[in-house]
Image (cartoon, rainbow, N blue to C red; front, side, top):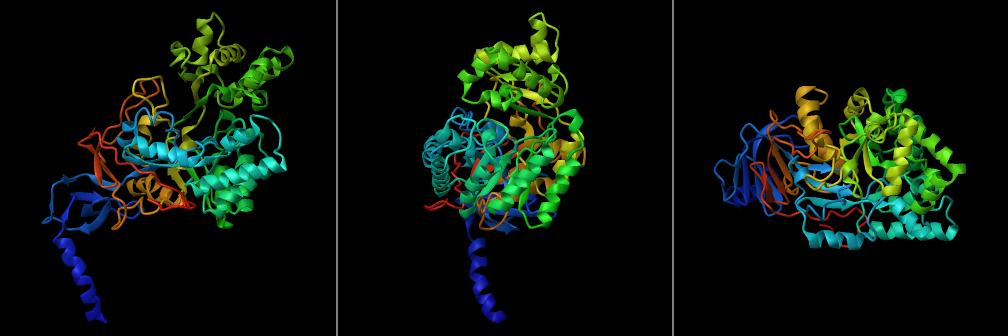
Length: 528
């Protein structure tokens, strides 16, 4: 038997030693994404695959990358983005690739393209630099069928929504996402979400959720998310998990206990997180959801109606004091306003003062009304505690994700996470603060999200896997983007390879756009 094994293995060894590789990465320290300790080895790439790992000092290649004193890891998978906002304007995706990110996912928070098939075709026609995958948004489907009505669906409407989820899964969606904090997802009952999630479950998908509440009712929201997973028999991911509002800081101890208990009971629960103490979303996050029913026209009518205006004002004040406002209007910054760019980079307190008003929560509500009437805006909310961020990050089922759009360089005042999430973890949380080991951080950026999202043959440095590779300097990698000056690329990523093609070369994007659509487990065609 030993002789037979030798005969079988020998030709393979000979073929590798005599092969010229398309790319050889030499002298690097490999962190393979599994969480195991690093090791030194060379990597040989042919076409779009890693074909061998070992001593390739005598091998031949037209592209030899010297990774001495550098880390060689799988390309990072950003499991929660809103990169559809910008990807067609910036198909090269420098802000992500210069952090080592090779795969982006979109369709989060209940909002997604639809139909999925048409969207994927548009991505393929555009030719982008990173890989791309999407979830189907429950909010998008609900709005398509029911508009923005605050009611339960009829049996016919629910059946139609279930068919749309089925279609999306068969066209390659990774799973179903919800934004139960946002309209129209906020109008959905738990049972409605369970019924739609059952469809995604049958196709091997995941349920990924922006929960109903991340402030005072965060524990109820965690329990609802877990219950959906149990009833729909589907893996669940608590997306961009955080604790909002000073009065609620420290509740991560309790939320993580709920997650651990669910995992012990056999429920597949995971988390994604960005490493910042501020969130970003629409200014409408300050408006009570009930007031947004029916869309913009009806919202403006309620604002102008004395009978409902006071209720809306009271709701805004409560959210400024005890929720996303972090207790004061100065903590809410306008990040982008297409109708009035002079608002960008200013907080609500400053905007009050500009208008001759005291920076009180009430006057801030008046400014919010002005912004809503003018055309809306996105905003950054400083209301998260760093201790909660640290604790959530250390949980073994937490992956790293940006939650950011694909920002056009120099436009607006975006959240710095777009430019810095992954580099920030590696530079600040690993090297400077020792919150995570380097091996564990890389696992949270690679194999863990690949495993959770059922992305096959990516997320590890492994023979036979797709050649998505990030090469970075562990001594210099760092985010540069700040809230005051967000348009700054991360530093320390030397080379990035996507599907066997070099995209970042010596810290510079070379213009290559080899990204592919990654379809989910329910895809009814031939997967990539």
